[in-house]
Length: 96
Image 1 (tube, rainbow, N blue to C red):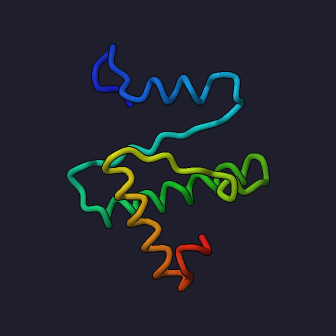
Image 2 (cartoon, one colour; image 1 turned 135 degrees about the vertical axis):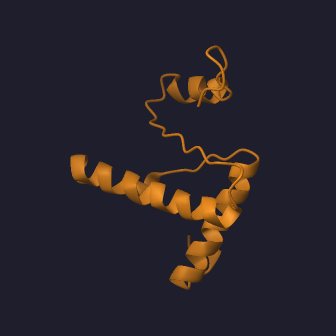
Image 3 (tube, helix red, strand yellow; image 1 turned 90 degrees about the vertical axis):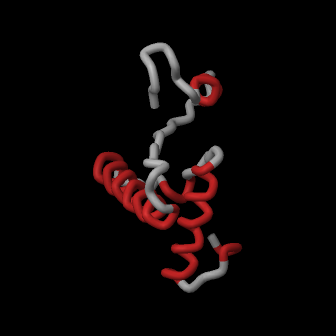
């Protein structure tokens, strides 16, 4: 995510993740003008595509070991995503 040629808003998080930990990360940017529900559906689609691409290349599902790190509106999008999953799967949030 870049706003200007010199500005990367999450550079400290990026440096922390890359700091000899061997962690991988993928950024999901969303359009703040969209509703939370629409953004949650886009996150769901993004994660499905991510899973399918990783499984296609390495034959392993990355989602069981994936963590979502959210900031501000991203946290609300993630909460809405979980609520959609709970409704779709019919499970309690604690089971996720």
